[in-house]
Image (cartoon, rainbow, N blue to C red; front, side):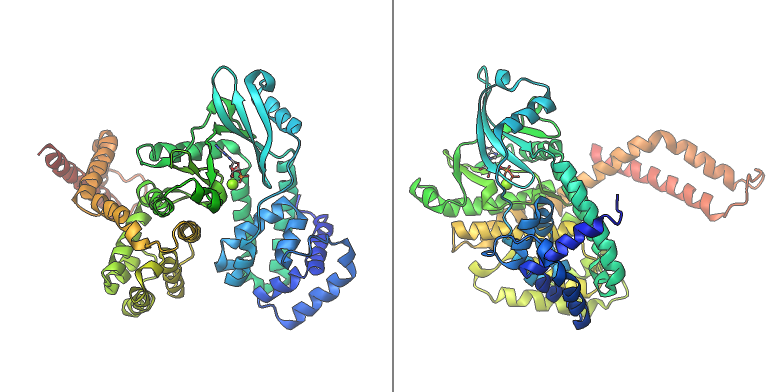
Length: 511
Ligand SMILES: Nc1ncnc2c1ncn2[C@@H]1O[C@H](COP(=O)(O)OP(=O)(O)O)[C@@H](O)[C@H]1O
Ligand SMILES: [Mg+2]
């Protein structure tokens, strides 16, 4: 219930922010006027004592959110990926939020597994370890399935986490409404939309079946990609609160010392990571959006292992093609063309000046051409591009921001593995391959096949459509109700056009 009982909860949040110094950081980021700052201080200061103290060694925002619990940590993490909302300074501060919490008891995890899957844990598993990692939503156990079922990672949701999130998200909704009402200057940041988005992201993460499906989709897309391992889901040991996935031994990508002493090819791994990410984005349109070192390993055989499929991004084919054209245009320094693609795709409103837009694009790209190759960053290029397109009225698209943020992380990890990595060299084969199969003749042929398939599907309805249109055109026929003459004409023309295209397509395909 989004009732006033949330006021007390929010007061505690406000008091915690005040006590930890986080309030000042937030007000700075929001460019709050002086009277608001004064009011906030006057209101919250007497309640400081009900605020949580947190760990004074942490920076204010991190300290406050960690003290307030899982939903706040997650919310902070989400905002760290949205510099468009909180500003880049606050986003940077939030980025250091670690998603780590003390583990819960193994007996509780076993109880969840038993209850969720309806199995006897000791009968199913030969071994079931204590937690190997614990985060705000779930924790992971290493287990061995009896009768040669192999070694697996069992991820189990925290007991009561759904309820806790529901309660906190409820307070977030209330806060967003209050903030929007009391502080009109904050509406620009669309607090209610942000909370709704957060809610949908978290709801997804609280259903581990979705994580299992994401892992499965990613794995089947990458099954022929060399040097990449995505462990398989064990579906009959997975449910809403438990997911079981093949265990992969190896070294965490954050552990540089160990990686080095094991003699792994670090520059090769950096390149492979970047290429894997680009392949997911361009070829599959479905990408892992949480590629930090903790979610990556190197297996004993030298494969790059990808784990943790809680946050994924998706980019539709139209957007992928459009952006491929944009990147190509950038590489050729053909700014008029890049601008045109933006206009044609409807990304930039048509009342803007295309030449001015092209000029702004030039200002983004030219400095990058001047850089030394190893310093060129795709993530930075995208960030600049979004800045310019936003100035020209393009609405922010969450999936593109997620893409850009993930690219920052992937590039960061790749650069740790190889400080001299050349991103454009690494990216070229993947981009070339995409362009070859998506912007040329092959793509045209595939599009035509698709049109033919659609025509084939609606084919049986075509005669009726045309007959209906003709009947409506017939002056002797009684009109059932007054209708514009354009409508039947349009339907008729559409029918004729689809038929003609169909014949052409069939001709094309049978050649
Ligand atoms: N299939 C697996 N094989 C080996 N280790 C795993 C596997 N899955 C998870 N882990 C270990 O558990 C840690 C946490 O798992 P992860 O899926 O990232 O959970 P969280 O969502 O809590 O971050 C990983 O960093 C990794 O060390
Ligand atoms: Mg993880």
